[in-house]
Image (cartoon, rainbow, N blue to C red; front, side, top):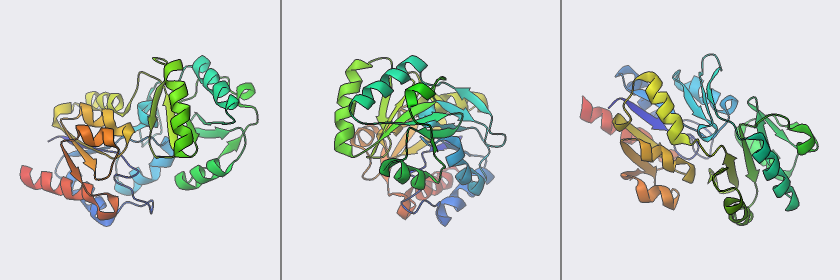
Length: 265
């Protein structure tokens, strides 16, 4: 075993937004025994950084559903595959026709047309500042790293049903949390991000154990040698996982990490 690859929200981090003591201990033990702990998250880097600092993780981190790989020490983007500007503008226009306006990510900063109940909920959850820019189409002149539509799950299901055929091959759509529809470059996923990091660090993907809970973790588990889904996770993820573990409130990932390390010692 060479590495563990872990999603954050719903996997390592629970509803309280914290890393548990057993989780921190398992990460420290893993590092001491020479097994890397890699993070693959949909979060922007500035939102994930506090967890990396707390856990003492300094290997490249997969952010933005794989659209960016970042050096946590310097903040340098080692890989950046943003959404095509023309596609992004077309999506924003399409969403506007439905009365929706997405979160837009540029230069690791979150921008919105105007603050709403949903953007406030999102920024509070992520502990992030939000910048209002007014008309997004008038403002956006660079390819965004990703877009996120924040709304009720039934609304997002309708939006996805409309966007998927229209942008087939031009847009990657996935859900991270039930009220967040993620839209990004069709060539990147958490799986492609992990492959980039593994290649850079000399890690064999079949010697990685990956953990996740959401639909956006499907590709992460697919490329890893062994995949663990959090109990109650997305049905697509549960269908491909090699096993399941309890959620972050019970620090299930830590228990699996400990078991793997015990079996290797």
